[in-house]
Length: 569
Image (tube, rainbow, N blue to C red; front, side):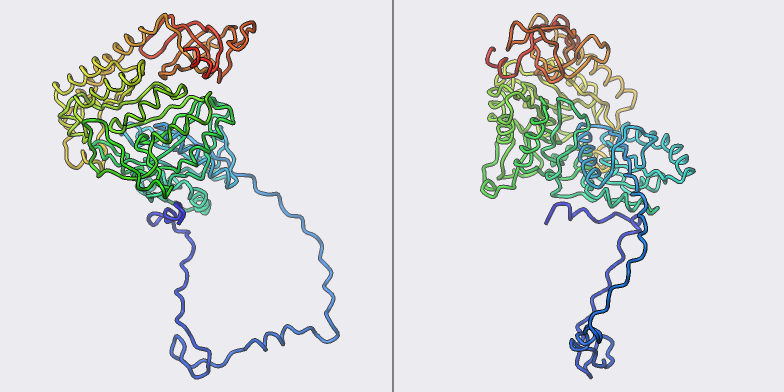
């Protein structure tokens, strides 16, 4: 069974224009006279084959000439393709989902527009991880009300759809609350978008929010929304089984399932052929990747978890794991950088760390989401590790990958968090010294374990104060870490002009830190006599002259290649 066949049903009474129900099959009715049919009455003998053959015999005098054709009637002009406007909120997975949705709609004859007022269809790809993210969507819908009202006056209807995690969490409640919304589609229902929009064309609301145990969109090559860009994201798995007590993801994106490796390699190869120079492998729990599509690997051994880490679910044997995928992806193009996000700290076996160290095109940068520095809070969060186990992993990672850049996630003000718990998180930030951080105040979400079992008892003003303290400490430590690079050279992948000055270029180093430098003529390492200007997609050696908590600045030295720079180091 193809994965999409599990998601074709529509939810609730809103899909009122589904195909009419098939009549129940009649019971077998015998044809001989005197036998009983379905209703119990005797049936007369009907016509047989000879009757139809006689009726088909040519008329006397042979076949009759065909009538003269009537005058041709010119067909009317073909309807113009429907224009769709896509707007994305939230994480990078939503950006990838936008590309998948657009690929599906494009095959159904839709065209893309970047002008909101020119659109026939507006689709919002939404986030539900925090209340603030959902509020942004409600606010946006209020702005779209006037636009839809104006379009009704012109008799050119505008259809609005809510896609993604917010659609999955609230389901038909969105249609009840906002009558201007025509369709609702969860993350596993994008294949159904053409049908849902066809229902909307008939004037009805429609929803498909069924989650799938199989859907990975493996056969759909996303249409890159940043045409000509030199970086891209490739989704390798969907869903999450960790069931952290604060997290809505398992309820909006479902259980973990991984794409077949062959389809991932095909997509990465396509991106390489298009000139993409950096690919980030995406997943809610990316390093838990487990491809079960190859029968011969279904009995493979289960990887060992990071020391001191545990899960709420039983170990899953079999399948091709993340280390194998990372190995294969890194072999496709030696000039293409490989990153991955977002991982869970429990899934960093030594073979993954060794591979990162050995391959010159796998970035020496890891995301290790801690969430809290307090063992007591980590237990309430159901993270599966202690502060001590996390720090042991950090030390092991730095021993295995010298110079590695680390980033992390933190939540301020989780249920029951005390000032002592908060100070332990502050001290963790000071001890680890992350290069990049993502810090947020806790926002309780319905359906989560915390919603049912815990009390959101930290006042909002205390959450804000603790968050501000965490951000301040993070920035201080990140600035110290980044200033250690001053005077050293960094290999930078050029992304394009700086947003603040057309005279400067912007890119990122191996550690995913932004680097700004002048757009000036520089030497080419392949031809020392030639002077060139760096272009997007070029690798440039930049000597760092200053640093802040988020940005490095420097002067360009020369243009090079990823392979050449690895050989020289």
